[in-house]
Image (cartoon, rainbow, N blue to C red; front, top):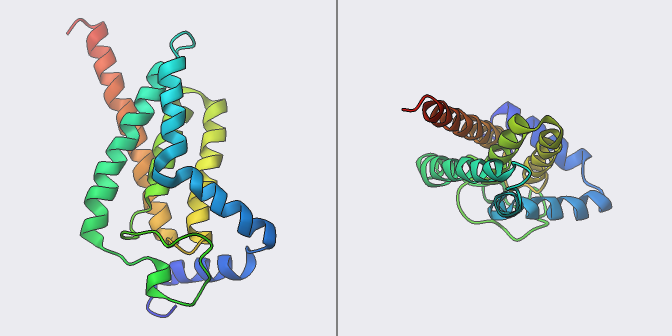
Length: 185
């Protein structure tokens, strides 16, 4: 993997040589599937919107959707098309066996990581207990992308940071709107 920054190269080489096993090679394709198109997070958010009226979780579901939409606009439609970074399996063919069908599109930032951390950040800020579980799942989804050799660690870190910022930004904007409403403005 010459030509790659030392951080990405070191982590990717370590993951490929130390983390694969028969059970991990079955687990992480399933974990990454949860983040495909944000499907798990979108389904969870929609369930909260539909079923969360009495428990007060409806707004959390709505905020999760808004945060993921912001991440989609900035990450998938903006940054990926500006950076145009090839995916690891395309840049280094034959280095690692793909355990999933090769994804299309550019590598930077990771959309799986972005949507996962956007949703998880919202949940964490609204409820620490459920949010901790959401962050663990988001972390597993993000790690799965490096494990499966479809993203570089910097793609995943950038996606996670962007997602967290989108989640926090969405909560900040929502808080401002709520305060203005309460003030009668």
